Length: 295
Length: 324
Image (cartoon, rainbow over all chains, first blue to last red; front, side, top):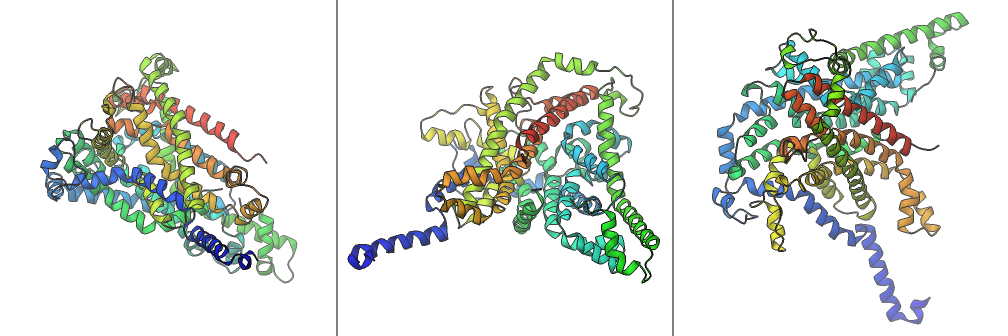
């Protein structure tokens, strides 16, 4: 009504409030973008520094105070990195170890996870409590006996020694069991009525439905094994078994930081594969956490 | 939990397994047959995991406890059973060692300061992304999560150059404002706080992702009802959203707490516990004992951390569990 009484000002007012509401609808709170972008910059500053440093020529690295953007970007650090380390073998080791551990966890954890979520058997509670209880065990508690065990199995100095102890972890069971619990029982009952065998029910009906949880567990297992370095550092006995983080750790401990360009290039190379995996699957990953983590 | 009882499942089978004349005994045996088939399937599915789990988790956990009560050294590597039992001597020696007590204190400071900071930062990021903004959410989410997926070795390389007293980015930026930055990692006053900040940076993404999932489960209608009742944004958050986030908060508090009590990576790759043990943690102490060949002391120190983790987890469940 007031628009009729004061057409000019009233119109401008509604115009402005409409626009403001539209901005709020499309953008949310516009004032939040500035501080959030500041936070984002703080969070990724180390990565920008890494990228810029990895392309810096020798002259820039020696300069004080340091330059933020390389004056003459060069790939010399990368080519030197590939020449100085047995990069191909380390990369292959990292891929083999990570994929094996990921595959093992996906398979074994979903199998037991299904049994714990949907099948009745004696000892189910005990098994579940035992598995969940070990989530609290610090890695350093099992570290020493594991080392003695693997050494006596003559597995130090082989990739098997890097893989075997981590092929099936408790976290995966927890995750898969939580997710499978949310699937309707009727699905399984109906399959039984149709004469489907118990193992076939798991393989053909349940497993295809657990894709979001499998994606989440897959990413977590892959990231964990790709980035793990303490165990490989201790168990690998020569260059043939080094994984990328081990190679980078040894390279960085043996060198002074006057040549940090090469080390930063190494950091880029370690980070790049997991970043690609994460970017590729991040949607499923977030969805998987949303459906599994909160029970 | 799917604790549907067996008879319930048997009923579903009745139309097929039970014959038209369907005597009670017959139905009963059918139920027992599916029960047996289920149990057999469960063990077939469980055995591969349980074998690996028994060998590489249960055995080491028990072994470690026994080892902490013996005098096992690295010389016993090939004959691990040929050691003598000495009871709790190692634990007594541990608490008489000033270095270990110091390491425990560092770990305590790290957890007490780092844990609340990480939870608060992760929650703030999640709320800002979920409630605050609508565009570019994926960009912010990936950016905040990036440190989580980064190898700690890479993190160490990057942060060491960032924190380099003369050539590092941090002191360069401080110099723009006329501040003469310290040698962060070589200064007993700054080394531990820097580790805490690094840990917050590395872990807030995990908290954020779980909190985001929790926030999405808060029904929109509830928020609208609260708004109609005249609740401001601040009140809506503390009175409506926050209580509903309790499961997510519990989960992140427990997992981050378990992580933080094992505070190891940062000092191991950045300072090796120095300067003057100012960043030495309990787990790093344990690892150093392992490196020196004192497997017994390493296990005992590991078990002390284990007990602390159990205690913290129980405490968190008491405080944060749903009251109803």
